[in-house]
Image 1 (cartoon, one colour):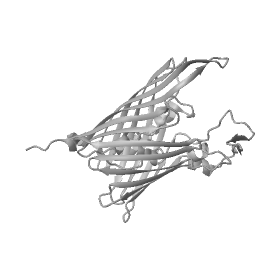
Image 2 (cartoon, rainbow, N blue to C red):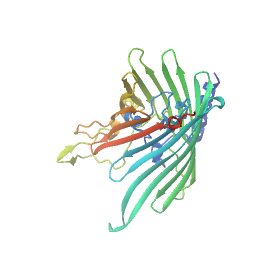
Image 3 (cartoon, helix red, strand yellow):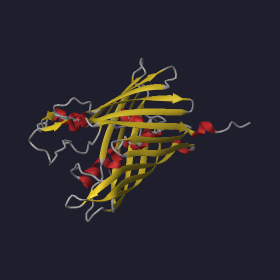
Image 4 (spheres, rainbow, N blue to C red):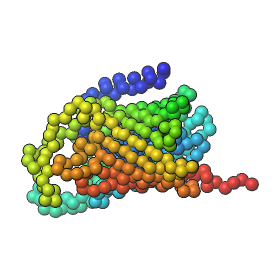
Length: 352
């Protein structure tokens, strides 16, 4: 089919342009979750073509607002003074089943104390990042949707600044007989326009494939996301690792062995998701997620941790949607994400 040829051509383009992908990337804001639902699902959007406007940051083809005018605000409370969030707006127009969306994503990393080469305090430094996004999605062929995003990024790290342009492309296919949905997306294809220093750094490219199925006799949707398909080895090698034990709260932990197998590296690419709808109108939802990559990279030997696991809930009250996501990144604490969304078209006055 034509859309399969398009996907193959995109993969060839990425392979030629980027080659081997490294772990160090600029603009980490592009890898942050953009909704409480995504946070509850392991940091990635579950494959589903629906009204959730926040999925456009992961795969713009998943957004299908029908006749709605969607507005969403999301904020994630991280450690110390760090705050990350986004404001997103989406609207469907009548022409050719076309939907438009736009949003702004922000990351405030708080006040960072500065020190000189002698360890003496200097001035307080600020770090912020912004992502300005605009995109569209439309029906390409029967149950096949395609979407794209254009992004302008700005980063301010103390006296250093950087700007970049990037775009995403996504495909989504709904199989009504199952019913199930499969998706494919290439995110963050682009380059810096201005650099922090004297050389240009690569963007955080991510090639994703996802799929989900909703059970026929139970209001449960199960999903899986395969991410960073452009590179095989996702093992993070920390150059500062030391071959000795260290103490946390008077408990000793041993450095983790670097001997990882083929199966472990395979599951590092996968995120498993579940969403259970409760109630006659399915106005209440429970969500779970598991990321093996997070589990392996953020766990500390000798300490019990739920790193890699996430969960949350969703509630629809009148014209509003409330979502909460809980992520366990490491033993230092939890990360909470809140999302408030509504359909602005429901506030229009009825014509007499």
